[in-house]
Length: 279
Ligand SMILES: Nc1ncnc2c1ncn2[C@@H]1O[C@H](COP(=O)(O)OP(=O)(O)OP(=O)(O)O)[C@@H](O)[C@H]1O
Ligand SMILES: [Mg+2]
Image 1 (tube, protein in one colour):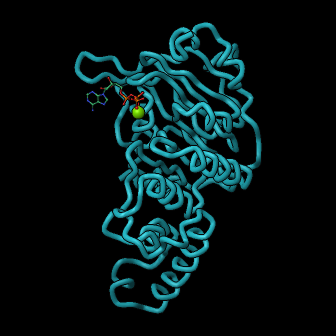
Image 2 (tube, protein in one colour):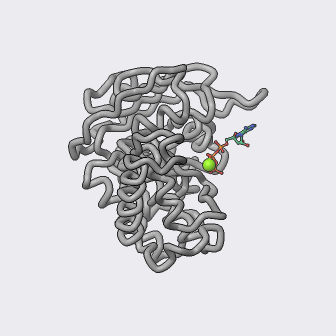
């Protein structure tokens, strides 16, 4: 089995310093995660072609691109759901290609999905408690036997779940089955469940899809707040409002990075305007 990675100390608040004209092969000392020359094909379809990308520690780093550009595929590779054909993902300076999804998550690399993945048959509160599982030290047997350590940990998780429900405005629906919630609240719940264990790198795939304007504003505030508390965020989104939270935005088009830098500069890039913004 792959050795678990040690989770790093909590991050300093730094801004991503990647410049569009900087060579992508350099390794900024502030990099928390790097994608190096990652390629992936499905049959004859080349979805990613030697993609490079750097996520600076403490940043919100964005990834945009037209439908089918390969964004979710890259997310799947970063989070370990897919293996690249070539290239490496480097986390805390170490390649993690052989590290399982579960061990990546234990090491603080956590993701959400383009289609919200909540436990529909559990309540919101139970979903949040489930998100705390990796904070626990007692084993399954201790849990089943209700041993003192397991009972103490469960009480701590329940307190944490209550605080998180309040923070994410989910308190009024804490005892509702997650499957009964409207999509906006399911997305918020998925984010809350991912954030509850205080991950070091939170990867979000289209978190604002299906949300109304107020919900997008709330999401943007939550992401900014989590980031100010030290969480690094990797954000895939078509939502240009939400992308305004990101210090650096990368643009993927037909599996290649065509621009990277501050959002204002990226938006003004003629290649991006042509390929993505339709200008
Ligand atoms: N498991 C798979 N098998 C075959 N083709 C796949 C698979 N996963 C993705 N693809 C194809 O790879 C391409 C990129 O898909 P991907 O989901 O990564 O794009 P995306 O940028 O996330 O798009 P969107 O903005 O629509 O979410 C698409 O053509 C898709 O159909
Ligand atoms: Mg996608």
